[in-house]
Image (cartoon, rainbow, N blue to C red):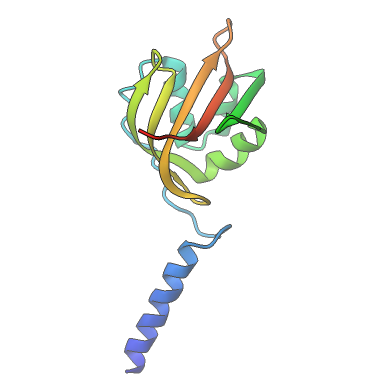
Length: 139
């Protein structure tokens, strides 16, 4: 009886810990996801960098004055590029639109859970990303 009770307590605390915000454990980042649908080279580099939490590579693809819109609301790109990139990732790429500039797929966030998301990349004349629109997708 004590053994069964001990196992049940371990299971309860294990499930509880996974749902806590700001947890100290790490979830597996999906680095080797199929990105073959992405034909825009810079977008593919950006998604690959995002998936592997390569902040330096990710940031190098953006212009100095780049902006981020999250569900249409302005958000700090630097904060996103140093925090979210470490705890969020696409689980799958479901569709690509706008000549390869818009990515839609299943998304995981250690903080907010699982949902469908989009990343829409816009470029300046030098080929740098000057605007990134992100948000929850409905498709």
